[in-house]
Image (cartoon, rainbow, N blue to C red):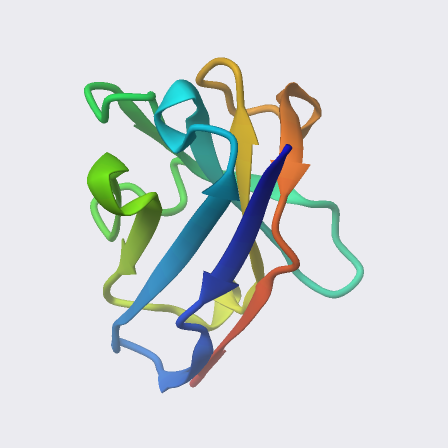
Length: 122
């Protein structure tokens, strides 16, 4: 079992930045690939970014490439999502998740946090 807790969400103006944090506890964090997903009202949960267990491989949704950066610190059992040049369409609840392998599919992930709200005003 892995427990995940997101933080760092909030209200920001378009063009601004936020850094989300995902703190993990329970089973060994470094054993898992990690991902960020988001869900806007009335929409399905969508992939944002994913990172391999050692941080050596990352993948991004096309909509966030060059604006968002995923990273992790296994010594601190923590993952991050640096979000720059935010747009109103980035408004959503952001979730972190853990999986046995790197993936962009929500069904691959066994463990999920409760989410943190990100709101970008125009």
